[in-house]
Image (cartoon, rainbow over all chains, first blue to last red; front, side, top):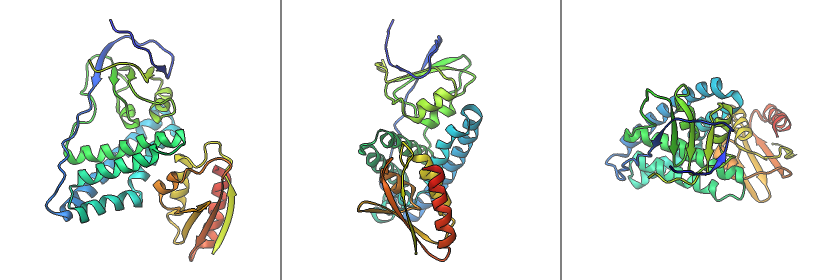
Amino acid sequence: MIVATGKSILKGIAIGKIRFLAKKQAEIKDTAADPAVEMKRYEDAKALATEQLQGLYDKAVVEAGEDHAAIFEIHMMMLDDDDYNESIAEIIKSQGKSAEYAVKTTGDNFAETFASMDDEYMKARAADVRDISTRVVNILTGADIGPADSDEPFIIVAEDLAPSETVQLDKSKLLGFVTRLGSTNSHTAILARNMNIPALIGTEINEE
Amino acid sequence: MKHFSYTITDPVGIHARPAGIIVRAVKPFASSFTITKGDKSVNLKKLMALMGMGIKCGDTVDIKVEGPDEDAAAEALEKLFKENL
């Protein structure tokens, strides 16, 4: 039996089967033949990501209330941000890189800017930029998002959970979640509290 | 050209939510908007840039509005700042 301690987000006891959310590292092809093709791929992926975020917003409004669903509106606005899009276009057009490479690099750069700020709240925003960038990269590479459906109720154990992953989880089956990383200030924690999901973050666990 | 100064009273400063509200409010106007804190200025229509400024509670910022609809825009924006920040 393994006992681990972490920071509790919501007091409660959950007993159930554990399922690991393994992050599949998407294969990022870096160069691409035609910038015009890559720009179109990006625009299409961005449109789909925006639709998905709208869906998450709608789900979050019902499950966590409008105030907390607002983070997904921020995500949609970040995705539409001029600097973010200009950076992606620049990498595609002048470096001859693939759309997924451009999005990942741009996402990482913006995330690093936020993470290096001396404000705890802004540091946590790095997670938001990574979340939207990962969503677009996953659409571009066709990677799997999230755990497969389950018949039984379960507790998710993961390295970390992005805000969108928290909202995407099937609440009817979810007993709670445990993550190794995480800040109590993060939107994941805020969403969990408002969706009444017992959760433990910053927990000392490893994937074995 | 219109401009106004404002001292932030929200304890968290210009965090994601008010930044989003501001950017969404200014985008439809034809005028250009610049926010200055100290020696740093950014275009108020750029969400990431605005958040990157790290404007905190107690900071005084200067907002410049310039363009065909600057009167309406400046008025609306100043009201927004007072209501949200």
